[in-house]
Image (cartoon, rainbow, N blue to C red; front, side, top):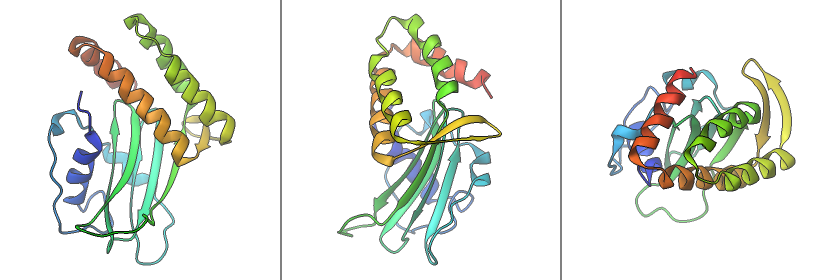
Amino acid sequence: MKKYFVIAILAVIATSSYYCTKKSNEPLVADHEEHLEIDKAATGSGCTCPAGYASCSADCWFSDCCICWDPKRETGGCGCWLGVSSCKTAPIGSTSGASTAVRTIRFYPDRFSSYLNYLKQFGVSTTALSNSITTMSAAGQSGVNAKGNFVLVKPGDYDQFFAAYESYINTLSREQQSAVSNYIATLK
């Protein structure tokens, strides 16, 4: 699996007005886009952004996210990777200073718990994933929508979960990664 898939998301999203309400003309370099799955339904859950900000969202099986950013300073992108959402920004050119982007993330712990049971068959420890889910759930605010029970999670907690998920996937063989991808495709 690709290590830096967010760059691919940003590259694809930055050139597509379908996913972003505003976009930068500065292209981003990406590789391995074949591992990127962009959910065309993602534009259904939008952000409430400050005037002049751009936004995008991703509606994935295990999580949803939405992000707003200042298009004069950053470019952004949203997408799904193996069932989890990613909403990220990157500075444009030599822009400096802290990001002004605002992310909202919903995580579906019941859906992911069932998935963890599936992942255990590969014989690779899921402890880091379980721990990150516990951290997110404890610190987040619970709610319910049409997809089920969710937790509004803090971006930093979600980033730790995402890193643990990416690390787990990278420990799997190509055949196992393919099996995971095929399994997730059946969940839709």
